[in-house]
Image (tube, rainbow, N blue to C red):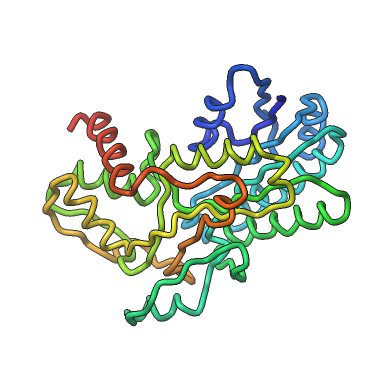
Length: 304
């Protein structure tokens, strides 16, 4: 198989390139996605069987302050890539990395924000999306563009709505690694944002298995949208407590010390029922085991 991969230097891209290396021919996109002519020439030259589109600005918090850049890279760049890919006659699939952030605001979000005890629901592929961050708006727009291209031109695509992934080894910006890193470096106190939101988390090995399953089963997955789950939401304050117990950290958490995000989302939780039913994939690494592996890495990395 011939693959063209964007975003190969990112968290997912680094792992996926290793997974697909070997007998496959892999082309790593070099040109800026915002340069349509350059992207088109590179895509046509690579002539891939499958395009894996991972490249994006993914720091949701920063998207509130860099709206134009996020829109240009994440939406316009994706449209450029799709239009270039339409020139590939033998293209079997265009696999797109979307996000559970597209669910955005849901009525239950206000209840959770206000501290009302309520049953925590699970979103799936049929849940109405209400993206509420520039990052999420751009990702949802890409989903709609792929659906349009499929209806109008028979363009093959699969959309993967990823949940919060963890297991990073070179980036402590995102929530799991940031909590771990702060606790390991600061025995007395750490600074975090909101404590009330619920999130579900997927370990990088499970995420890679999901991507590889979709890629290897393109015949089943073309034209499909998949959530990955797992349906295992945890409140951020409880998540912090869980990590603290594993590390043995007994310091103080200073909550709400980061700038408030406009329209903060208080619940993101999805089901993997559809992808499991269609492909057999399901998450295998428990949250506890995944955290153990991530903590162990950061301990060695920080020489703690």
